[in-house]
Length: 531
Image 1 (cartoon, rainbow, N blue to C red):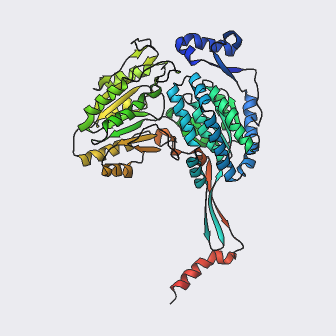
Image 2: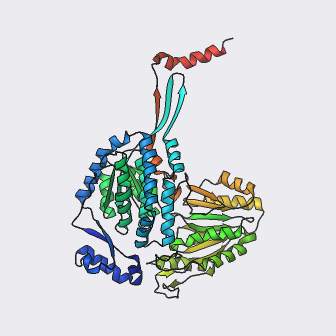
Image 3: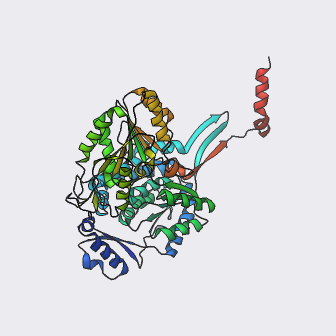
């Protein structure tokens, strides 16, 4: 904060993810005792991975002051320093420490394969292609006579970021692109997973800012409770934008609070992504992409949440999907092929499954809780990857698992009733566009006319992918952001560098005659029309 590393009288402790899996209750009890000072970390060095200082109210206010002081000077830095040089430094430092970052993510409970996926996304975010795109959007220049005209984006000022509990490190790094836009940044490291955020910000982002000469206070990272910190951000006249990750219900309420306080709300809320599979799709590859629904036990916002399939290939798709789902298993995060994570509260899963079955859905696979060794157990902390089949479009959105984000490993496959392809394609497009959420959508189809029709008419969502992984990262394309209940009233694809800046037009003249600037265009028009 303000270029200094601060300690605290209070600490947040991070315990080994393996210890948590071995005994969840004992580990959570130990964490509470450590943070209450009833046990010292030296007593349990076998399970304590690290600790992060917890900020008090005075420290939170101090972070805002430091960011407000730094913002004007940093915003005046040349674009090539803020984006080109800083972005290249970040990419280099992230690549150098990729294995260390992945290991920290594993210690915080992310399976190794998903930890590496997150790191690859961070690298794409700061790749040469991506930073070149950011640069192109921040300044465009034109010439008209003796004038130099610019359409440029200017930083909003002080940006605060509240990352989610399920992916705090990668979400915090996404927010660092707001710094490339000329803003100062305050990040709240969540108490549930603070170590990765603090590590990357302290060991990678802060040194890169120092190398380009950024003023102290350009980056500030504090760990604390969300409620008091969000309230402090809302109350401060120095805060301009708040990037908020959370549920749609909480996010839309927070959006109203931001607007009332004159802050720009940038919301990253729930997703309920639709994958559409047409009759000429590559069924094997489509099914492979659909297994991404179960990565992290469905506790990721950007995974496939529902499938819309042509009736001609529905049975083949379900069969292929069930075969592939059988290879997705639980285990310790350190194991190289594990993709399932614990679901500590599973009552919503069973309520949602019971609702679907009561409305006529068919259970294709899964439907039980299980232990680490995959044995079925009602008290297990893992859930089997579960596929249900919903017949017919007309009543599909009466099923809870279709109408809302589930956030656990339950994937509904909606099979359309037979009808002519032309009408059916329009119904598919309408179904996707009428989704109340709008994060990502995917299409699997071979016919270019079907693809073009879909691309021309689907406006829902911040990202649309065709015949591709639903969650794979690509340069230049957004990783987050969307419409409806995903992004709120102002929702769109989220490039923080763009969302935390505003457009400004500039004219630079060598000394034009003002009267000619006002009336000259009309006079020239009349002269051209005179024979």
